[in-house]
Structures are given as C-alpha cells and as structure tokens.
Image (cartoon, rainbow, N blue to C red):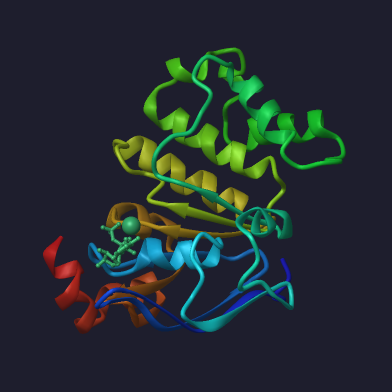
Length: 238
Ligand SMILES: Nc1ncnc2c1ncn2[C@@H]1O[C@H](COP(=O)(O)OP(=O)(O)OP(=O)(O)O)[C@@H](O)[C@H]1O
Ligand SMILES: [Mg+2]
C-alpha cells in the first residue's frame, strides 16, 4: 500500500435554496484507504458524494484527483478518470446471470485488458463463485448488493463511493460486507457512507462525521465513538 494522495477536496460548498447542504468541507484520501462517513439524516453525506462523483458541481471549492482538477468535468468523465459509485437503489440486469451482469459492466470501459480474468477475480473477491449462473433477479438481497459492487469494480476504478451498502441487510450479511470491503481496500480507495454503527465498528477505519453540512469530527472510529459532540448529535440517538 502506498500513501500517495489520490483525492484532495478543499472547502467544498453547495446550497439548495436556503439549505447549506455542504459547507467548508475539505478532505484528502490516500491510495488504498478505506474511509467511512457517518452523520444524521440530512447531514449532507449523499450530497458530498454527488460532488465527488461529479453529479453536482460545487458552488465553491476545489477537487483534485490524481493531481488534476476535476471540478466541472462531465459525469462520464469522472467515471473515466477512475471514480465509480454504487447508488442505494439496485441497478442490476435482473434477467441476466451474475456472470453476464459483470460482463456487461466490463464493456463500459473501452480497451479493458483481460476482461475475463477481471471477471473471475471479481467473482472471487466478492465471494460470488457459487452463483455465477444464477439470474441476478433471483439472488438474495446481500448477494445483489455484492454483485452491484462487483459491477462498479469492472470499470477498474481507483476510487469507489458506496452510499449505504448494507441497507436492508441482516447482521450476517452486514458483517460479511465489512469483511469484503476490508479485503478490497488497499487495491483501491473506498469511501462508505453508513448509518449502521455495527458495520462501521466492524470496519474500524478512519471516519468522518458530517452534521449540517460540516465535518464536526474525524479520526478512528474508536475515538469517534467516544467523542461527546458526536454522541450528542448522532450516536446518542442510536
Ligand atoms: N437536489 C436537492 N435539492 C434540494 N435539496 C436537496 C437536494 N439534495 C439534498 N438536499 C438537501 O440537502 C441536505 C443534505 O441532504 P443529503 O441527502 O446530502 O443528506 P444525507 O446526509 O445523505 O442524509 P440521509 O442520511 O438521510 O441519506 C438536506 O437538507 C436535503 O434536504
Ligand atoms: Mg444520503
């Protein structure tokens, strides 16, 4: 693992009418790190992802990715520079098999070398080997989510943004998702938005707490859990 800075965002801000959804947010992500973002409903977590993934343009602030400014690029160009995103709503091809879904996703990236090897590797990384020929629509909920992560990986991203990947999962699937993500990080950078404290605790990773559009705390999750301000605005309500 290297510690090169992959992404550096400075002083990001965006308003929706009277709401400052994100204000004065700065963050740096290193190559191969796993970072969690937590915060109460409406804190600005998904909006921050929209800014980092190019779906929204900040009113203010800069974002550098691999040393290059990416603010103002078109959404498809964000994907091309290596930023992939999994939305909460599943977007699988339900009448295709697991392998076919990965195959379709692998074609998104032109000139991808060694597509088959990449599909095999992804099946192993996400522990989907036993259901390669199952129709995606017939997978249990957890495996659907893992397949979606696999599809995002087929574009060979350097940064993967996951918005609430364990939504709707039971404890076992949640725990497994944590294990899978810990295995994937190091070969790419992953940022996870999550509400499930059980999951964030299992990741035991550097965590950033958003509240009313601002970062109110950051550090290891163990320290975050002990932070009085964080407990007041968020954890205390769990
Ligand atoms: N497209 C939009 N238009 C207007 N307001 C928006 C838009 N997107 C988000 N907001 C507002 O910005 C604020 C931050 O919303 P955001 O969705 O980023 O929160 P969140 O932290 O992801 O919350 P949740 O945990 O509920 O997903 C909220 O007040 C929300 O109503
Ligand atoms: Mg959200």
